[in-house]
Image 1 (cartoon, rainbow, N blue to C red):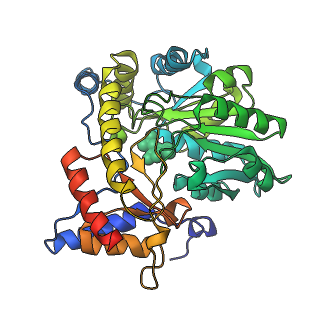
Image 2: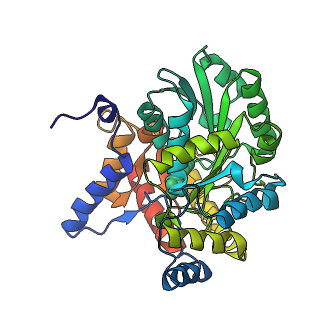
Length: 390
Ligand code: PLP
């Protein structure tokens, strides 16, 4: 089959590869625990599900405007005002099929062929491939566990060229859980602006920041600098709605119009009952994200206690999301030389599925998700520890 060069440049998802291997073992009757998942282990809240059911019963099942129903766009704008004091008109908001499509569409409408995008590593694994799909060039900015995997201005400065068009920031981060906080986000945004670099702030985990750390957002900075950044968020992580595919972007209305044009010629709009569900989530009670946050905080502490006891393993303390990203390079050997080999070994010997750090641009590390019940987590980590430390 003759396929385009564009699609041949893209890597298949590493998460899918590890899941396939886990499935293979499961088929042989081996009981596998997955710490590889990227979604909350909570059910979508009842009032959100009820809103979708009501929408279906009321035949709210037809096409909508590309950018989403106006009341949802206004509710998204209301989110930024409620949590970050940023005031935006609904024309500055578009609703997409997950935060993923927001990011994809942004790169498509922003990048010219050859434009470079600064991506601090470890990064969410879709960023480089999305940039490639937009004919851009991903420029990876390495960071270190000792610096909590956070990029400093000097790190970014080293990679800037006259082709640099954009910088993507993700706080708290998938895969590290590390968090820039408001002051550092602002510092980086100001730096980018001074260099004429557009900032994309992926804030999909902003509701999952653990006290004493505070959620952070570039939405208030956007209000003052609307041509300099776009903020991406969604309901997948905050309301356990991964399968509903609700994401959104806050950006300059001209950029939003361009994204809508692309959406109009590709996916049209987000599923209409899902939009009603999203509206219920954004305008309803906010105790659900707080409940999840408390559970993830407890599990982070449980997991950190175990991981910190592994000799030679270095794990920055996450301030949000539901991942740990320890560096286990000290445990590599001639037979287990990298993160992919280590994950394969852990899967075989501890029956625990993890994602190799290489998929996120850091081969020293493994990604553990703690979006599983406390007992499962402790049991799985104890088994992994026996393999790693052996
Ligand atoms: N950004 C990050 C950092 C993520 O981890 C994810 C999902 O795992 C997304 C964006 C996209 O989320 P969704 O498309 O499910 O809204």
